[in-house]
Image (cartoon, rainbow, N blue to C red):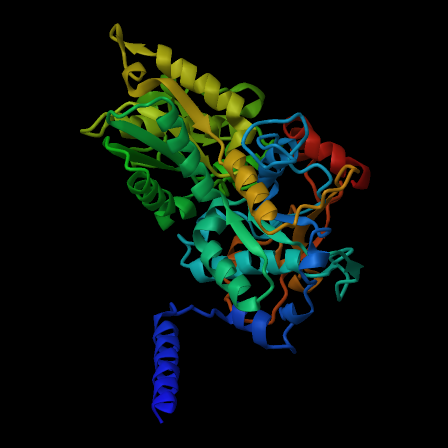
Length: 497
């Protein structure tokens, strides 16, 4: 009898502990797209995670990377060229062999739905969250469209073994949903975002210099990323985790139009124009926080060559002023960040600027040149910006730490491919689906603004489809930029263009 009571007490304790653990599980927000992917086998978004390859098969699967456009190729480029770890032992330090040698990749540029950075300001943050999940589902799936006129996806591809979100805005709004989806799926697939990687890089640099004084960290990112407050919260969180004792000021700069200019979105940059147009959506002259200040024109030092600025003048004064090159957008936003710092009470020197959008490294040379001009700029014989710039200032590209985190995750899960051959890259880009109709398309073939931001989450409607990269769906100027700035990636995709 005593033995029975003892066993009963043990069993009761186990049940109570289990119930307590069950009660402590965090509530997961199951969005409509997550529910469709997990539970609704009749949905076009159903992922069939039950058929996902088991662990011993998964090492040979590709690594999936996605972004809102081609800017994420800068992250893929860093991953392909990465040599930060010993390939045999996994210890820190280069060994002359790329960390991802032999790994295959799939890249998705959700070009048709970009810019991601403005969905939140349009009141469509929920739809942005859904787009991020759909991007991940594509990489986790086995189908793609051969062309936008296909009624169904006829192309076949492999599923991906890990997901890298190469987009800061998608990380800010979609990382939590994708992580929850993958945990609920039981697939064992991990997801990595770029925001934590960028912040950790900033603090690694601070600790390496043994700095303990007050300092500023700048963040240049899309409107959506800044509005999410993800970078500021992460910076303060990492500061606490690392016990950094000094005062850290975060200076955010919303890069309105910057990413769009890199991707040559016609509302922001139109190289065919020689005069201002009514459809322009970039910054203009004014006195607001996001406006171009006429008194700062000598500081911006915009390039007017090749119609880099479209303007009209009357009686010697500008009546219209429109930026028309990605380089001029870069100049405007960097100067605006320094002006913001200059107006603060705590003018702690700027230690670094995190390039919180994957499109921005394309203009790194312009940003560096502008920074040098700011260092040298004087007014009334006094340096205006030099005191605000740390002697060892750096631009930080989060891609480096993203690559390291991805490699470590694959090693921990024993999922490195360990092939002797060179890896491949399959690149896809989203385009409008044929059912969208011409009335919802711009003259360049993209979705109209009204249609793009008029959609709602939770439907079965297909409005964009992923197709392979080709010269038909890549802007020639953008393709030249890709060839110049991400040569490793270009070499792997050029034969399929």
